[in-house]
Structure formats: C-alpha cells, structure tokens
Image (cartoon, rainbow, N blue to C red; front, side):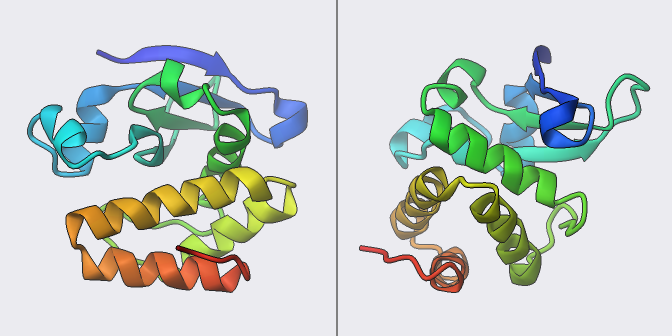
Length: 154
C-alpha cells in the first residue's frame, strides 16, 4: 500500500517533492521476495530508497522509503538521503544499472548541503550491508564512495 507521508518544503529543496512509503515497491526493486530477508540479513531499510519523477502535477518527484517512521528516526541520515536522492535528478541511475559516478556525485551533493554526519552513517550502513550480503560489487562501490568523500570505513 502506498502512503503519502510528507511534502518537502520547495523553498529548501528547490523542487516539489513528496516522500511516500511503499514497502512492496522497495521489496520488488531490490529483489526481496519476503520482508524477513531484511531481518535475516540485518539490512537497515533506510538505505533502501528510490527516487522517481512524478506524473502527479503537484509534485516533481517522489522519494520512496520502506518505513517512513523509521526513516525519520535519525534526522541527519534522513537529510543526507533526501539530498542524495535529489542528486539523482541530475545524475540518474536506471533500475538495474550500476553507476559509481552518479552515486558519487549524489553523495557530493549531500555532503555540500551539510549532511556529512548523516552521509557517513548512510555509507557505513551500506558498507555493513555489502559485507553481510558478501556482495563484492556493492562493497567495492561503497568503498569508492567513502574514499571519494575522504571518509574512513571500519
């Protein structure tokens, strides 16, 4: 079920953006057939976000999250994710595509917007997930993203 959770301030973010919660879309896009995989693999669902252009004339884009209440628990990380996702308007990544350059540019936007603490948390959670899943590609990409921002991991 899709739930419109929040409309972001256009003056701050420069676009008409809404945050929606859609667990089934997140699960489908990330290839998870059952919610229990999130618990089994200890995946923090805040890092599983999507950004779509909107067909609704009231919004320019939607940021899709798995669990809105949990997404809002850490304000620093929430802001970093929002700015990262906004970056995808200039540096898109198509579904199923892997694009380190785009991800790095989106991280840089969040960094420039003052979201370093949240971005560090976000990238560390992504790094932890990559290790847990033993996903070498995700691990390598996350290390490169961390290195591009001159952050430390482990």
